[in-house]
Length: 363
Image (cartoon, rainbow, N blue to C red; front, side, top):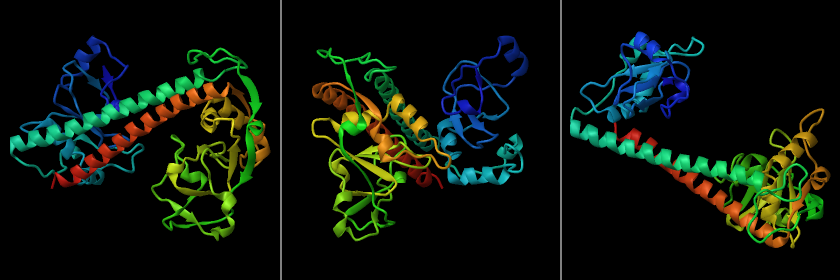
């Protein structure tokens, strides 16, 4: 197996070299317990070799063979800010891409305990954290892949009126409806600047909608800088869907849920209030499909900045089943979203814990 910089996180690759080339070019090669580190481009990312199979590696990686020190302990010492600072000081930033020479890596100093039992415990702790992070990230990626697949299969494609995958008991053909036919109204948002969050009134703008999850980003929530006594119409209600109408994020959508609190929406967003006999979650999930993205790509073309107005959004055509089938599809896809969020949140928590422990378990 032939490893390069892009393989550092997994130390797995689909590239191979011949046995003859390996025996000719690799007198020294990675063995179990050794450390590989990126030395060109993204300098300083490390990983411990856990396999016993022979590995070849490109010049963009540096091979370290730990001596009289726990491999996992050393691997995490090399991830500390102190060690990374030492690497940066010796990295040739004038080179394109930037790189660090093998001899310079060896000059970076580290602070370490000489107690092998303590090394092993610290190394084992971080190894466990890494495995948990990998586990949750893998599960999150699997759920995202499944969601993408089901969005393609649970909605009719290419002019058809029946999806490839359906819940048992549903056989009726779907009907084509315009988004305007399933919405009570389309309304533009507040023309107001944002101010520091007042503790009650939240303000959602295009940039506050996560590009991947389409959730409201609550890390740096703000409030609208305007008198809200006359802003009742800009207050979101359960099931309202927002559409980004201009800029690079045109077409991005968000569905309001009461758990997000009291939220007002900004002027570069359009609110669609879905009719009572239609499941708003079903409409929202439809905006995550390829068909929707294709419509936005075509419709948003302008001589200047890309954009889609309320009239154009109302013309988007949706294939609709009966309400019972809408509900089942919506519940299923929403559960997938919840699982994705759950695993991503756990992954982020573990990464933050690891970052904290790297700062506090080493000198």
